[in-house]
Image (cartoon, rainbow, N blue to C red; front, side, top):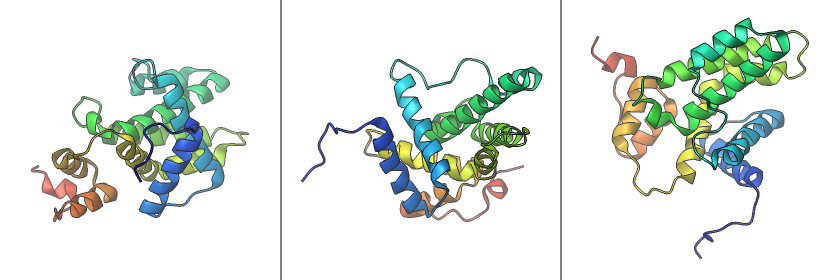
Length: 197
């Protein structure tokens, strides 16, 4: 029987299910606290994003947001670093394909997001430091999870192999390579070696 078009569940329940599927598929495990954080990041995206663009994303470039955070008071710095990390994680997960076609590229977004979480984890006296330390250390892995959730929730039936290949060339993502192999394409060289210098 076909899955119903409208489901009676909250965004948190929906994204928990989608994230668990992606984690099983990619063989990724994490603490319940980190999983809860990722699910709530996605749920906040739905609540804030229904009216237009991506949630929590303002027009300030990520690098300028980082500079603003560094110059801010301690409490404001923590808020800005968390916002920066969350924005970068959401963008590099849900909008990875569109990042490769813009000035803001996927590597830049992932690097800056991981750096923001790492700096936040080093802030003295923060009970959430282990969470942000894990988000920093495994940023690419968690971004890949969000990419899978994004792909599973899109209303399309044909995956763009060219965009997937471009993502693999740009990032060297293991997940992108596995998806290419599932499409019958076997990437042969390391992505950075494949590009002419």
